[in-house]
Length: 310
Image (cartoon, rainbow, N blue to C red):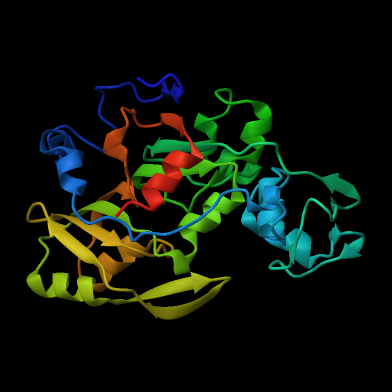
């Protein structure tokens, strides 16, 4: 076990998850081997950098604010900007994409100076079922919701905990690989659509996947998306499928719309019974000896290697 690994005691090794009954497909996956399941296609090569603002390069305002650890969500960041609560170099800025050099122009929120942390951290996290990828409010706590950040509290420094961000999101029931970081640059590098970072999922469907359905999934299907309360149709980009059983297959996509995989499977007349993310770019969960709910710190050099792997 790596020295920089934190194993959660909430789901001990060897005990099945409440959503993985003995004899289920999840129980059989261990024998199949995640590594064999995910080897094959790799992410397209990219060049990138972390912490460019530390080198004097301009950074977008919303990325800077996300990295300060002062805001609990992207929505809070946007609202602070749109409400006129943010000043850059003494002037109110309401453009979330505004670019500036944070080393020469001070940023304030409601009159309080904001600073970037000295160093960023990146964690590989094995998300268990039943956890949301968000900071929770009192109402959500009252109805028993749990956050992935709950599994970091008390295991990392409090100043680090306040700055943690999920790199994209997995829905409450979905399990598997999730990056969690203090770097807004890392979040943008992996989640921005123009970067086409590959994500691979093990999908257990309710019914066998037909050849016709496979053709539709790989060619692109129309799904319904909701953005800021408005719905619209969206055609997914081409995907790839590797069959591993009648109802089980590995789906690779290079985009990450909300609940996209579940909606894609629904669009071809089927339904997802269980969804598990195997990999992001060249990083596979099988590379790490992690229980569900556990995490391990990795370096920016490791992450860069995964994102640029042929």
